[in-house]
Every structure is written in C-alpha cells, then in structure tokens.
Image (cartoon, rainbow, N blue to C red):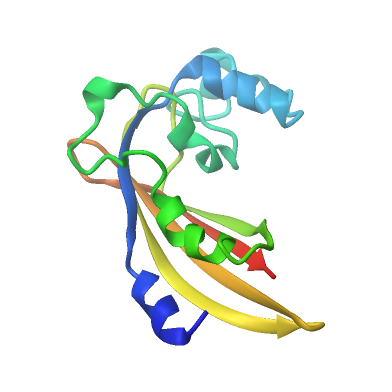
Length: 165
C-alpha cells in the first residue's frame, strides 16, 4: 500500500461511543481474566482499598466499547456498522492476516462502575515494515475516554493493529 494511501487514513475517526460502565460487567471481566480481587465485585472491598467505587480491571477499556452501549445514549457521531472496516478493508482485499500487535492504557483516573463515558476514536498513525519477505502494515488507533457532561479525561487506549501479507 503506498504511503499516500496510509497518510489518508491517519486522522480518520473510528467513531464516538457513549458507554455506561456496569458493575456486573466489571465483575465478569475480572473473572474472565482470572482476577479474583474482591474490589471488582464488592463496593466495601473497593472502599477498604481507598477507591471511591468499584474500579474496572486495568485492561477493561479494551472491551469497554462493547458493553454498556445503550442506543439512547449515543450521539450523532456514533459509528454505524464497523468503521474499522473502511480502514482495514483495503488491506484485507489483498489477503493476509490481521493481528493485534499491542495495547496500552493511560489512566487519568480510575474507570468506575456507574461512569458514563464518551470514547472518541481515531487512527493516529499508519506505517509499513518489511520482515522476512512479508509486508506488515501497522495501524495505530487511539480512543480517548472522558466523563460525559464534564469532559474530564479518564483513560486513553492505544492499540496497534498489524496486517501481514
């Protein structure tokens, strides 16, 4: 894929999503990642740990856009369908595989049960590398989560998606 095509996807929005962080989902996620800490299930344990509420497990923002997305909360900027299909579709048209390369989270404060957060995603970088005769295209997507109403930053999630052909 030519550099000018990659340059065109940089800055492309991947959608705005409003989520309600639900206590039950936090407990289920903690269980799924084998974290038995009671702070993810019991408000008394969270308070004893000095937290203002039940926190999300550290990697929860990876799935946050999939849980607590109620139609009545969404804005006009909410994605319709899969916005990443527009970004990755031209790559996949040539075949190959998609890999999740890495994920990082920057917390500005804990994500807590009951939070209503707005996630604004966009492609922040795209580049290619050659490795062992294969072309790897890296697409870096960042989602900035903020508190609805105040705009207070809560968490920034940065994901690297790799297409290899």
